[in-house]
Image 1 (cartoon, rainbow, N blue to C red):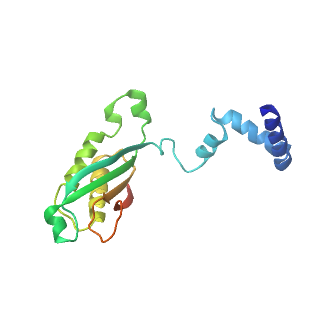
Image 2: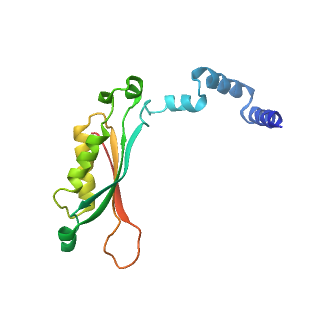
Image 3: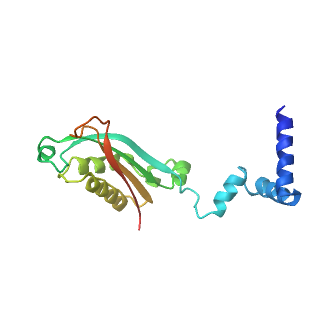
Length: 171
């Protein structure tokens, strides 16, 4: 059954592409890389190998005093931070050496210092400071996404959380 389906699909592809184009596609698929046309398309694009490697920290919880309302600056509230950093992790994977990656314990400390540090009115400012600190201190980080959530915000109405998400890249 499977072989018939594959044969029908191949014949349909031959008809729609023409035999020459199909042979060219198959030759490129089988000879360029072991993972076929998807990898060869990626190689031909502007994406560099390793550009999709990510380090993420999710659900970091801190008590901070950020906000526009005076009560927020006095009582404080919980903030939840997620961040994702684009880093080429190939060398770290090959060498098993911490010097070839980003130490996420250091990143955690940086985030903690910002969130538990001096109050800011806007969570946009908190996110921007986190992104800048990480990019400035970790050369391997190409770009960073920072999400700041306020799960217990004082609003009239019920909501699970609110927050912002920013993306910054190395200039």
